[in-house]
Amino acid sequence: MMFRKLVLLAAVSIFTSTANAGLFDSNDFKCGRDDAVKALAEYIKDDASALLQSDFLTKSKFDYNKPVSAYQNMLDGITVNVSNASTGEEGSYGLNCTATIALQIPQETLDVVSSSPDYLRYVTGAYGKIKNGSVVWSDVSYNAKLADNKKEIIFKNFNKNDISDALFNVSVLAVNKDQIVKALSQDSLDEAQSAYKNADRELNAVWKELPDSARNALKKEQLVWVNEKTKKCGKLSDAYSEGINVNQRTGIYQCQAKMTNERISYLSGNNN
Image (tube, rainbow, N blue to C red; front, side, top):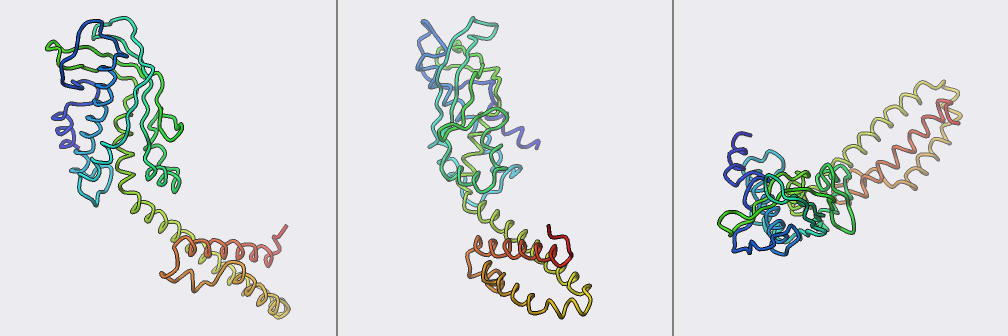
């Protein structure tokens, strides 16, 4: 963590530094002026890049199996849109500004969120809202001023400090989509398999506890149920086979577990 802090300081920490170099006209400088809006978008991208470079070295947040350039290229290609920028009174640190900031969400990131809604918080942070394929922050307040050299615009005091972090997150999630979705699918398969095995053990225990007369009377019915379960859910041998699609295997286990639990309730006399 200390190393990450040093890297971030070297890159200049978020919301306290120069955003863009160039030659800006100081006459009638406003928060919504084209140069100020462009500089703010580039500043957010620069800070997100610093977060990416730091985490790629420390692996404190994500795992990476591709070159850093793959993640950087994704980040560079994401549109940062600044709109509705307005200027308030000048404060002790430049102009008091408010704006709406939106980040385009790559389809790959949306696919990850669809696979596991838990990842939504990586995209929206604490305050962002999903709208038309973008994550949007409204009423973002900050200060902006021209540097003394008139070549840079300096930004400070943002009230939404999760924007750069969200840009960094969506970039990594997009590039890592395949490995994330694969891991999620494997987790779902393992969970479904475990649920089925637990239900199957319980069914066997319930069956053994039945009186001999009940087992003899139910034997044919039980065989019919087993065949019906296979017909409806699929073969367990397919669920075990790595040659079958993982989602199909998961579905077999889930269906088998459901029907097995229903059978347990029936045999235990708990079926409503």
